[in-house]
Amino acid sequence: MRTFALDAACARCAYDRSDALVWGEPILCAVCDARERGISEIEHHHVAGQANSPFTIALDANAHREITALQIRLVPHDVLRNPQELHYLRWSAWLYGIAVLFIWFAEYLKHYVTAHYRNMESLSHGV
Image (cartoon, helix red, strand yellow):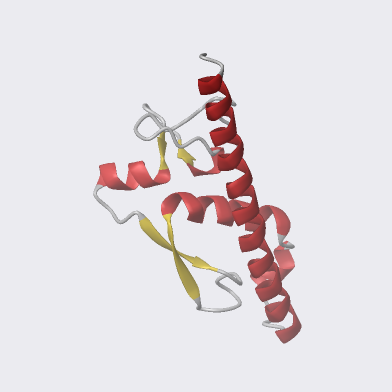
């Protein structure tokens, strides 16, 4: 698995959350990459995993990549895949999926509030 430098960011919009960055020269976020390739920047996320429900929510490509990466890290593989189509795993997948959305949103807010605070601090100190 490739990892980006800690200060890596999209060359077009400066988006800097690594799960949304696309390898290439230059490095782009998933949204800018989609725009450059002429495809939709909106993608559909299976909240409970594709094996558990056809229900999706529309997200921009950056959010979709970040939420999917978080889902893969946090939700047990057996719950996401559910090869036996067990109802209790399907419900578990829904609960995990909703929790993942809340966790992503909290991380997103924390990241941008922190960045905004650092920016305000540097402006107030004349840096």
